[in-house]
Amino acid sequence: MENFVVSARKYRPSTFNSVVGQRSITNTLKNAIKTEHLAQAFLFCGSRGVGKTTCARILAKTINCFNRSENIEACNECDSCKSFNEGASLNIHELDAASNNSVDDIRNLIDQVRFAPQIGSHKVYIIDEVHMLSPQAFNAFLKTLEEPPAHAIFILATTEKHKIIPTILSRCQIFDFSRIGVSDIAEHLKYIAKEEKINAEEEALQVIAQKADGALRDALSMFDQLVSFSGNELTYQAVIENLNILDYDYYFNTTDFLLKSDIPKVLLQFNEILQNGFDGHLFINGLASHFRNLLVCKDNETIELLEVGKSIKEKYLVQAANSTLQFLVPALEICRQCDAQYRASKNKRLLVELSLMQLASILEPIASTEKKKPYIKAAEKTEGIESQVTAEAEPEKMREKALDAQESQKVKQETQNYESAPAQPPKEVEKSPETAIKQATSSNTAEAEKTDEATSKQSGLSKLNKQRAKTSSLSIKGLTNRVEKSAEEIEQEAYTSQARTAFTLEEFKTTWSKLAERIKADQAEGSSIVYAAMINHEPELKDDFNVELSVDNKSQLEEMNLKRTDLHDFLRKNLKNGGIELSFKIQKSKKLKKAYTDEEKFNKLAEKNPHLLTLKEKLDLDFI
Image (cartoon, rainbow, N blue to C red; front, side):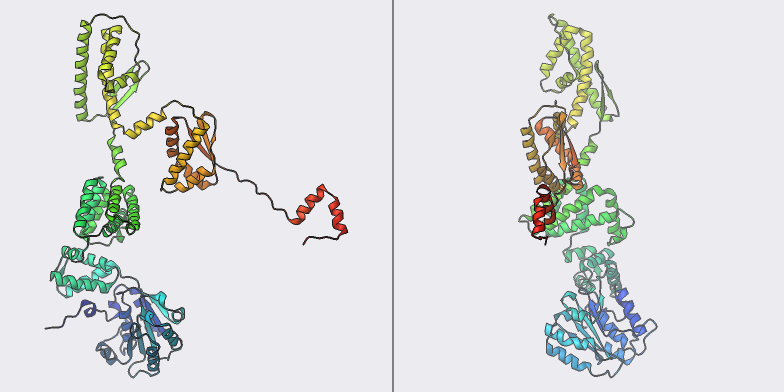
C-alpha cells in the first residue's frame, strides 16, 4: 500500500516562483542573492500557513546552489541541491525553538556556527517559532546574531513578532508575510485538483479559500478532508455540508424577505437555520458580510473586492440592483450592533430576531408612503364644494360609481319622503363644508339624514338635490382620503391646527423638563449634546408663543436644529398650542475677570489711599 502524503507537503513550493501570494518578498530575496547583498539575519513574520518556513528553506537552498539559473532559482541538479532535497544537507540546520528553547540549546548552536561549510558557501540556520525562546536564551544569542562568522546566515521565523525582544529585532532584516488572497488560494487549489484528477466546482474551491482565512496550509488540509469525504467529485454542496458553512441561498432568501418587509418569513428562515445546527452569531456575521458584498456590487469600481465564484457573483449583481443604499447602510449598522451585543446577551435568539425585525422595518416607511397615492383631489370654494376626480385607477372608478349609485338611491328615497312629509316651519340652518364632511363620515348616519331633511324642507327640493349630490360625492372622497391617512398623521393635524391656547410659565417649564428627560433616554446620535443644551440653559418665552434658547457653541446649535421638528411636535402636542416656534442662538462668551498681580493690586489701593505710596518709600518696600 502506497504511503499517502498530504497535499501541504506533496505540493510544497520548491522555488521562489512557486510560492503563492508573497511575490514582493520573493522578488526581494532573489535580488539580494543576485547582488550578493545578503543580510546576516532574517526575521520572517506572519500568521500560520503563509509560507515563512517554506521561503526560509528555498532561500537556504538557493544560496548554496552551484548552478543558479538566470531567474535566480535553484537548479535541483547540483550536489548541494540534491542533498537538500534528500534531507541530508550539512549546510542547512533547522531548529524548533518550541522544544529547544533553553540556554544550553542556544550554546550548542553557537558552537556549531564556528565551523565552516564543507560544501557550498554558507551555513544557514533556520530557527522556527523563535518567540518561544526563553529570555536567557535570547540574551545568550545576541552577540552571535550581531557578529556572526561570514559563512553563517540566520533565518528566524515566528507567528508572534511582538513577543521577540527589541534587541533581537534590531539585528534582523524583517519581512512581514501577508495573508494569502482568496483568489490566489483558489487558483492553487484548482491546480492541485487538476494534478490529482479531481473534478472540483469553482464555487467549492472559493468556499474553501474563504474558510482558510488567508492560510494556504489550512486550505490544503480542508481540501484533503473534502476529497476523502466526496471522492473525485468535489461539489459546492459537499463543501458546505462537511465544513458546516451556511449556504449562500440562505442569505439571498433572507435579504429578499427583508426587502419586502416580510417579518414572518424572515423569522421562519432563521428558525430553519437554527434547526440545522448553525449558531445565531455565525448567521448574523454572515448576513453582515452579505450586505457588505451587496454594497460592493453597487459600484463598478469596487466590484473587484467581491471574492466569490462566477455564478454566485451573478446572483449578487442581481440582488444589488434591487437593493438601495438607504437599506444597506442602516442594515450593516444593525448587524454590527447585534454582533457587539451577542456575547453579553442572555437571550441570544431574541437578540437576533429583534435585529431581523429591525432590518425588515427599514424600508417599511418608504413602502407605506409609496402606497399612499392620491386618487382624488378636492377643490374647495367659498360658496360651496366642487370635487374633481383625477388620475384614478380603473378599479377605483368602478368602486366610486357603485358608491355614487347608492347615494343617488338615498337621495331619491329622501325625495319621496319629502313629498309625503307634512309641512314644518322653516329653520335657519346653514351647513359649512366641514360639517358636511363630518356628517358624511361619522358613524351616526341617521342623525345626519335628519339634519339634511330639515334643510331640504326649508330650501326646497332643488336645493336638497344639489346639496345632497355634492355632499355625497365629497363624502366618499373625504372618507377615502381619511382612511389613507395614518393615525399618526391625524393626531399631528389635531394638535397643529388647534387654536393657540395660552399656557403658564410653570406649565411650559414642566413640559420642557419632560422633553429633556425624553431626549436623555433616547440613544440616538447627538441626543446627549441636545440634553446638555436643554438643561444648561433656560428657554425664554417671547411674544406670540416664540421660544428662544441659547446654546454654548456651533456643535450644539447644529444638533438642536436637527432635533427642531421633534421638539416642536412634543411641545405643541403637550401644551395644546400649534403656534409654538423654537429658535436657537449661540450665547456670547462672557468676559473673563482679569486676575491682578500683586503690583496691580497695590496700585489700585494706592489710587484710593495715596499714603500707601509714602509708606512704601519710607520702608523701602518692593515686590518679590
